[in-house]
Image (tube, rainbow, N blue to C red; front, side, top):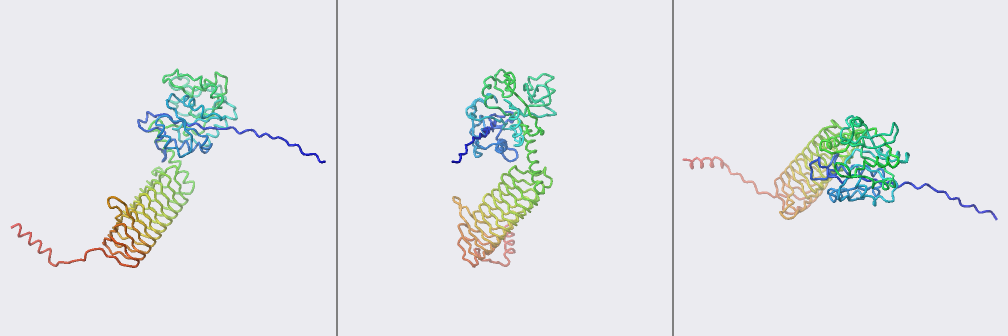
Length: 479
């Protein structure tokens, strides 16, 4: 009998489980605001949302824990859709206390990476480098440091000789004159071996000016416990900057927006005078589109290729197809525009507007919950609300859909090929059939059949000599 092959056992090393803890419990008193610091917006979304989005490039949402405290439910509600976990630090007693509160939530992980919820410029690449360096060094604690020309106000990193080892982090208030000359600062970003962290975290003391547990003190705790503490220095100090004041916040906003413009320029978009444009982080723009000065593209706006967005236009959470021209001063919110359409100048597309391919919405035309079909035109001074307008329709200047009766909104339906004369008033609910004509200055209150002409105005009457007679009568009264 042939010998049976013996089974060999191969053991694959277990992959370390990594959790990310984001510090977001603070109030941010220097902002002088009733709102949580991490919910103030830069680059078009809350500061905390930027940090979460970056963290999700490193680990799944289920491994991210946001530590919340001040206005906890407000913070939770704002970013809950990201799918992250939350740990409530009901009493804010410092950054060290935040991780004490998270002890149970972080059980089962091998490594914990700590991020600051108010430092939105941090990159996924830097977080990964911090994590990999920590693993390679087999350290208990790894901190991310940076060299600043003006380090005032930051904790200084006290190295062990010239190597990667760290002896302590010394805060500005307690630093000696010699230590204050050190330009390497602690960023507030860390990696910890979870087992070591929770074996030693209870050794933190509140013997400081604010009576709080400082996470920075863990460097000294580990050093005294003969555990390895190391630091890796970022090559870009700006990515670790926090937003403690409104001035700092606006500086970060400017950096984010300029970086967004550079990203779009590299993708083939032309942006004239980028520093005058306000383009949010989540905006998408196709190649060969031209963005003129003083344009705002906000929220999750998507602009197609070969478009031209002219100056002073503001576009919010809208989708624009290829080859669209947006003339100056156009305002658009939660709307959709098909390829080749022309908007403005000074058009106003309110939420729910849907403009078809090659259609025109001209100067001082306002739309709301309106669908305008392919090739249709509303070029001048009109209001089109709660309306469904077919293809090849002409809407004359001054046309109004009267959609509100004081209690309820009603719909106007205009089928393909209809011609609406200038200054028409369409009182909803009303339907204009295919190919029908509505005479200028008509008030339409009833449905118009296909191919019909509708007139809804008084017959013109001319009174010869009326002006002369009126003036003579006025003279008689004055005598």
